[in-house]
Image 1 (cartoon, one colour):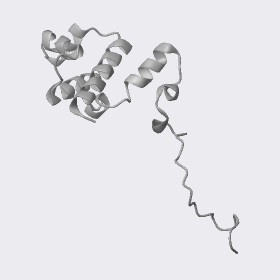
Image 2 (image 1 turned 45 degrees about the vertical axis):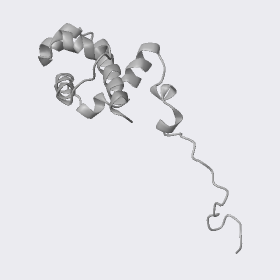
Image 3 (image 1 turned 90 degrees about the vertical axis):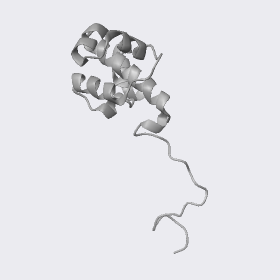
Length: 116
């Protein structure tokens, strides 16, 4: 995953947090001391967030900075907004019921057939 993909996740997660807490961009700018114009530019994906900005925003929302660059916030917020289960929105590889690739040369467990 590249830096721009991480930034897009950060934008989605920050927007989700703002929406779920009914907080304005202006309030976030004031609380984090990030200039409003900078914050608006970042949230429009016109320029990427800096690590320092991610840390300031994470501290404001009382979440780990790593949560802002992972799907852990946006997916549950979106699911709640549309009345779906978060697992319904995740790609299969991110769920507990992810299919495992079958292999042709599987070795049967003891007692499951084969030479005895």
